[in-house]
Image (cartoon, rainbow, N blue to C red; front, side, top):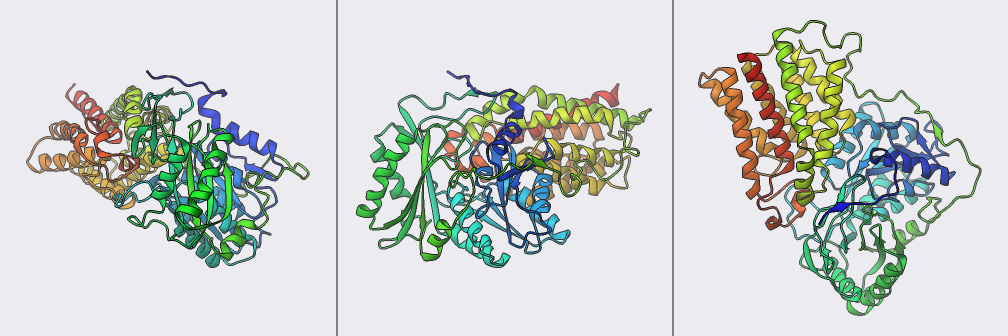
Length: 593
């Protein structure tokens, strides 16, 4: 039976910003950019981009993995860390703010865990920064060894091994190496590391109920760090048995995920997932070291035991192995004042926050507030758009709990919350600034709203969807039905291009691609616009039904055994079909009234 999780928090929506405020109060070597709540960036207090003569190393991702990533900011490790909401990728604007705040003449390296949202957001920020003249390189870390290849387009997940890559890159940067050299060492380190996790309990997101997915006498093997189900659920075993199994899986010659064989030297990290006592972690370490030496014939050069990359309050641990050599050991042994490697709290306390060196990037479109506002008198198009947007947003809001429930079984349990955040903001912004008599600009503003508040993979994909549609509609303030269909087709092509998914991958495209195809077919056949819209919305709902029997090939669902997804619709597809259907019905009602 699911129950409300207990948390020592205030507002569930403020946990990330309040964590950052507490962190910088604790460690005088850290500051945060004064851009709350949109900009969540922790950076070294001693770095000024105009005077910084070393490569900046920046990482980040969704919150909920503390002390990662902000706890590893400090000389000899990260220069800055960017945080999103809990389990949601940080938005592009936050990443850009971090790059601008710490990057000097030698450039910056972005270290990114291999999740779709992180790759997209950091990648887009990198391209924008390059266009502004910054030198930027990016290294992706995918160290998961639990799942057998192939994993569709998603690839291996980024797990606790990313922390070791942080340390190698940070030490290389601190030694004065060039951007190319630092990126090369980081990439090499990422290729030498492998991780696998085990959980005794699921995690509870702030403000949500605790899942009852895992019985008291069961454990999950091969899970990620976002609460998604593991590779397998098995009976609870003694920790010695579990450690032996995990090491065997990481070192399996069948997958060849890590280049570690008999005679190799390794670094061992035993990482708590958030609710595991140090006693239990040390018991696991005590087994892992002789198991590696005696059973696998490898020498253990360094051992790190503690909580480095967690999953909120999950009970369990992960084991990471990195093949070591003298250079790797030099980088790991190099001095650092990053508070969690190890804690360093000496020094005078500077101001807790500093201003962003350039204005906070606007999440709204570039059009000024004076020219964009709700027109006093709506045209027929304006009234129709207003009805469609309002109906679509309200439908998403009503589906929040159902989407979260489905996503808890197929992902990380926050699809409904993320979509709710976006839909609520759209309703609020629509009243203040959407130029409803101009379809193209309204679509553009919806994308700007989503970019500002949603975050994660869904946020940037919907932003891409709106931006591509806007580019296609621009110049057509009152588009025809065919022009709307062409814009939808172009936007779906952009989502597929940048996200990597296509129809059949168990994503929102499985709702919207059939809708687009049916819309164009019916219009070409001579149907009126309303009829074509309604029929295409029915195709979207049919597409959602088809996802119940699909094997996921993108997103976090791709890490889950196919049998665990049977009869569960893809939450992203359901959300897309729901707002599309609601919009179609609203348009039909408005135009036929």
